[in-house]
Image (tube, rainbow, N blue to C red):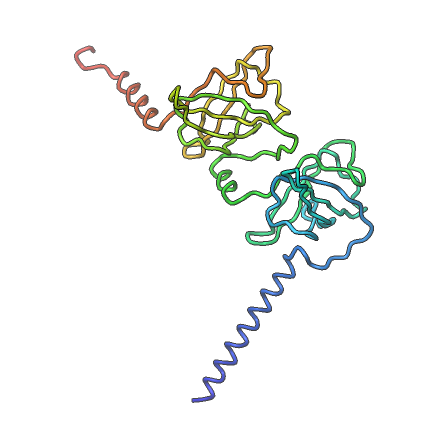
Length: 280
């Protein structure tokens, strides 16, 4: 009886050892701190509003090919963005100035790395220069929001200005929802609060400063992405020569349409097309 038991114990032990060996192999393949040789290099700077679990020596990749590593990550006391220094192999010294640096995750649960997507500018980033366009790591909540149609936008490190809008009904609109113009995300909802005096919803929109020529007679509407997607604010430009300034209020608004209202309208319109038999 001892022989089968000993064979079973040996088999179990081998299975455990092989399992740990497989995990160790996967760790060396996906770890961002794997020992990778790097020759002559130059540095680039990039700022991110959220670096997630990005670490020093994490890979820097172009088109999936490793071209460098993260040299340092710092946060200044008076800033709310992370300064990331990238060490790039000198063989890849023709990165256009309008390239985008994005923080990605290797696989589902792997380590994070910086991916650079080439732009189309003729000017290149010199040694010690900065990549102005970045996209930070996205928490699970934001990825789920994208799945339901919320969309995303390149981080606005340069700043934003705020405008206000009042709605009689915002539906499920919440802070962080996108603000779009012509279908392109240009900002986000900063806050949604109930006005105790006017008895409506007061929404504050944070808009990227690059979009500072929006006419002041533009309209803001609350729409839904798809059938059951998340809600967002769409700005429909007007024709006024004057533009919205920081702290202005948008007068023309369109509230969220509730599903019950849509069904009611459909039933009313459908029933009005049918005349009683006595009128034929």
